[in-house]
Image (tube, rainbow, N blue to C red; front, side, top):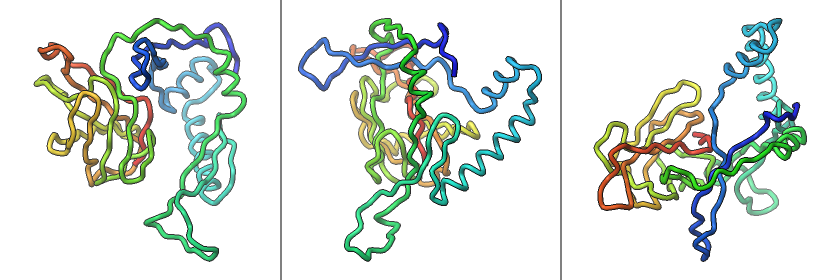
Length: 244
């Protein structure tokens, strides 16, 4: 992966409320855009006219299927910019303990390659000060599994921790939504499923019928620390993809 002057990121600052210092901040990389595999293929074709997008898609799908098959059969696989392997969650009692699906689960472990880590280190960084938007989600915890920023369990609870995230207002789209990253289907969390609705914490029940897949969580609100609501709603999309 070539490192050029174009390799750069922008960082915005947010209040760090966990420390005693009032001027402590943490940085968050500004997400320029979200790209799909088809987007990457189109970029590749635009750079090299000899490439065929249909053939590239077919080849990518074949390699993905092979990599997936090998990984779930216990292999360690270098694919793209990461090393993939299987891990185990849960405690086993005794030398002859058996697998218990209610206590144990398999998980996928991903480690970035040295190539990707080197490219990240070489990228230039522009810190442009405090973020203009006040609403931010710092973490999403799946209550059923205890996993943070990685998973949602249908029918289970989820806790959002952040700043100015209280859901209020009458504008269109107010609330929490989950967008399937493959189908683009948007699932709205009913207001009746929201158990805690505070400026720094929200707890809600994940829909029991939520289909398996990868989702992006978005929160839209008109909340303001002032007495009146914002005229325009704010939407914050959480950085991490959540697996169901």
